[in-house]
Length: 357
Ligand SMILES: Cc1ncc(C[n+]2csc(CCOP(=O)(O)OP(=O)(O)O)c2C)c(N)n1
Ligand SMILES: [Mg+2]
Image (cartoon, rainbow, N blue to C red; front, side):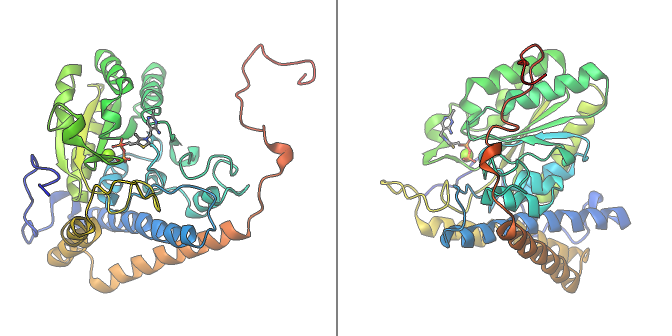
C-alpha cells in the first residue's frame, strides 16, 4: 500500500523543544487546552457512538471522524463563535469543535425531541445556530453553496465575520464546489474552503478519481490562495486556517486549505462493502503513527505546555460530559408525531393560507 498522501512531507515526530508561537504564554496555553479538549470531545463522543450503535440504540448511520480530529478542531478554533460553519455527512465533530453542547448533539443522534434539530435530522444533519453551525447534509457537496451564500450575506451586511466550509476530497470533484469557489473568488467573499482529504470517497482512492495530486492546486483557477497542510497536526491546521480567516476579515477574499488526513474507520460504521479495499493492517499502521491526539499529547509533553495530570483531567472532564450527554439523550422523549411537519418548511412570504392567518 503506497503512502496515502505522497505529496506531503512527513513532519518530524517532535518539532523542537520550544512550543510554537501560537501556544506560548497564558493565551497560548489556553489555546492548547482548547485544542486538546475539542479533539478529545470528538474522539470520546464518537467512541460512545460506536458502543451505542453496537447496542442498536441509535436509529441512524454513523460516519465517524475518528482520525480527523486535528483538522476539524484546528480549523474551528481559528474562527469565533460568531463566524458560521457548514459541514457534510461526516460531521459530528464539526459542531463539537465549534463549541456546541454535547447533550443536544447526542439527543439528535437518538432522534429525540431535545436534539439540536428536534430529532428530525439525525447524525448527518446537525445544526446549532448558537455556535454558528449552520448545518450539514447527507447530500455530498450540498452545504458548499450554503457556506458561500453565508459569506455573501456577511459581505452584503458589512460584518467582518467569515464562513468556514468543510468538505471532503470526494466532494472536491463535484461541480458545485467549482461554481462556488469561482463566484467566491470573483466577489472576494469571506469564505474558507477547508478540504479534509482522507484519501477516499467511500472506497475510491483519490488518485483514481482526481486529476491533480493536491486539491489545493485548484485554488489557482479561482483566484485564491491554496495551501496543503498536515491534517494530523492541530497547530498546523489552526495556523493555516487562521491566516485564511485573517485574510477574509481584511476583505481580501476566500482561501482553500487542504488538510491531508486519515479516517480510522469504515466509510460508515458497520458498513461492509462486498469488495474489501483497505487492509486492517494499513489502518492499524495509521492508528499507530498518525493519531492526532497522541501526536499532540507527545508534543505537549516535550514542550512542557500541559502536564500529564492536567491532560488526564481534561480527558476525564470530556468523558464525563459525553457520559452525561448519553444519559440525557436516553432519557429524552421522542418528538410528538403531531409535530412531524413543524420546522420542516420555511415560512415563505405570500404562501400563508387562510388557516395560518
Ligand atoms: C450527491 C451525492 N453523491 C453521492 C453520495 C454517496 N456518498 C456519500 S458519502 C460519499 C463520499 C464522499 O467522500 P468525501 O467527500 O471524500 O468525504 P468522506 O466520506 O471521505 O469524509 C458518497 C459518494 C451522496 N450522499 N450524495
Ligand atoms: Mg474523503
